[in-house]
Image (tube, helix red, strand yellow):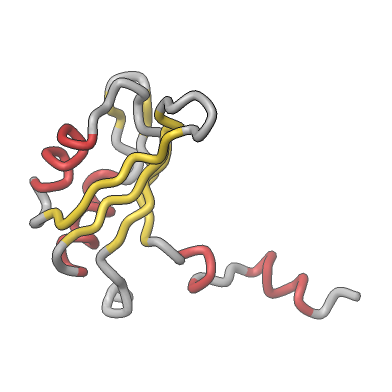
Length: 102
């Protein structure tokens, strides 16, 4: 299915500012065991930046969470859930066409 190369760490964007790490863990634990949750804080203001990382115990749990939660609306926010490093692993046509550019 294409997910055999996955690691178990997920990058999550557009997290509502009021969401806690425990709430995020509860949400993702529906799809597999969660090893770690880390919501990124703005260094200056120590407020959530709306993004973070969720590490699942297994790649299968990570895959299930992506399938279920990517594009899911939580309150007024629509989550973006992807594998960490996915941008590097998935080369789309626009990127490939830039490789030969001067």
